[in-house]
Amino acid sequence: MKLPAVPESLRRIASVLEEFSAPSVAFSLEPKSEIQVGESKLGGAPDLPKEFELKSGPATIDFLLQINLAEASPFDQTESLPKSGLLSFFYDLKEQPWGYDPKQLNGFRIHYVPAGVPLVRTPVPRPEFGLQERRIDFQMGLTLPHIGSKAYEQFDRLANLNDEEADAYFDYSDNVERFGLPKCGNHHLLGHSDNVQGDMQLEAQLVTNGLYCGNETGYKDPRRKALESGADDWILLLQLDSDDTAEFMWGDAGMLYYWIRKQDLAVNQFDRVWMTMQCG
Image (cartoon, rainbow, N blue to C red):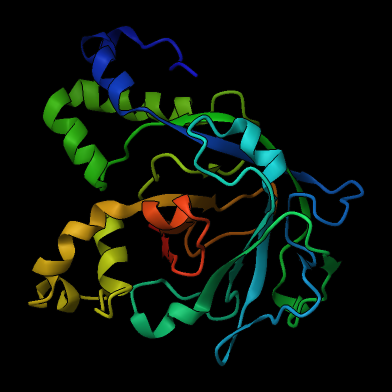
């Protein structure tokens, strides 16, 4: 998939834009219409193996969405996702942890069910916190680095944008990511994250190794230096935006992001992920 036409104001850096563009699996959320067991969807009751427990340690977790990978993988231009099975995302919708505290790592979860495992529609333990059911429609997408990310810092060093170009870049990157999608939240699997605040890769590495990042404590910890090189292993797995059309919001019009190590995704290991919420 190629970038849409580059505006005249950014023609100088057209090759840099191509270099830093990253494919994604974009999706929109549509009103439900007879969603069958095992199909991709957001909200409602999840489809799970019979013995699955909607708990993560002492915490109860709530259902966000499930991705039928046979439906999503044809749109995965990187061929990074498993080609079959069901990938389900959970989050504590009552407490809504932000992700910077190692003590709250049980407030989210991803569960992968290989193809062929029987599934049953499973009642949620806290329906009062559930999301309204929506069908998921996939399409191929493209993303560009967003300010606040390590990728944007690398991009900006090469592009060296002036003020006019910077304004044009942010408009263009937003158009690229929403190209062909209805007006809705900016949801996608893989690709670059749309950072609302700062870098998430280093935070993922520090928090999952036990360092608190709700203030400067973790960033100033002497263990940071040894851990920092592993930050580049973390890639975005899911970005779930606030979405007026589906009637949910994260904080003040923020986003949820699920991150995974490249090496874990390569072997379908989804039990060592990290999630964070960012909002303005």
